[in-house]
Image 1 (cartoon, rainbow, N blue to C red):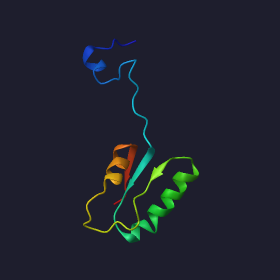
Image 2: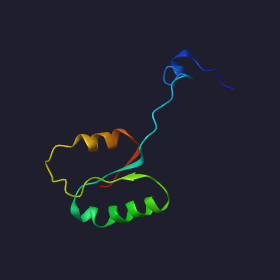
Image 3: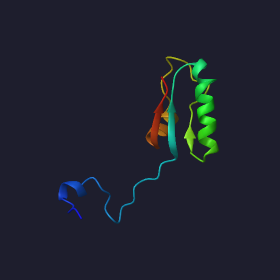
Image 4: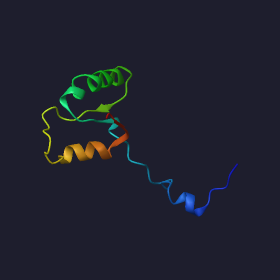
Length: 85
C-alpha cells in the first residue's frame, strides 16, 4: 500500500468536504448543422438509451454568437466532454 503524501492530499477533498456532483455525465461538443443532424444526433440518442446524462447545446445557437452562461455552466458541470470534429 502506498503512502499518501501531503502534496497528494492537497488535490483530494477533505473528509468533511464533498466534491460537487456533476449535472451531466457527458458534454457533446460539435459544430455544424450537418454534424448535429447526423452523427451527433445518433450519438446523443445512444448515450441517452444507456442512461448516460448527456448535454447537447441549443439547436438555435448561431455561429459567432457568444457562449451563454447556461452553456458555460453545462461545460463546467459535466464529467467528460466528447468533441466531434
